[in-house]
Image (tube, rainbow, N blue to C red):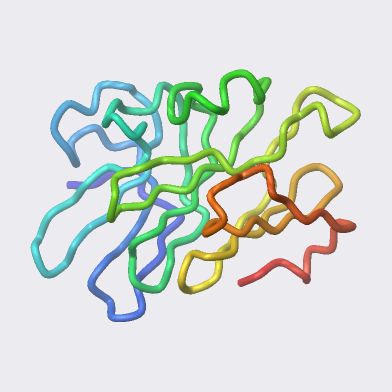
Length: 170
């Protein structure tokens, strides 16, 4: 029985339910004692954890669901884990980083802005959303709103604007 579930999203057809939970009994080998992000396939009656690195290793710290694409393929999450994407290690100094997990290819990618772009070294993600197809991701980090084109293959191709909470894609 799940415990501590929060931050839920449902795919357009109702098949997939994404959520965050601290429960350690939802998937096999959940030993990190952290909040993780999961997807429940209501048709297949299966649950998988998506707050994992591309190689399948569980995150080493808390993660939280922010958004899911309408077909359930893409999961946008905020995580304090340092092992979800090796590209984030040299660029992220603490704080909650933004990650996009593609369920179709089992890949987790870091999509945050490097903290050196800010006056302080800690740039926590405050909010996040994506378009229904997962192509565009928007998020707010300490004073700026950001949009990332996930299809261009580079999380560094960013368009930054003044932080306006109402301008985030929902």
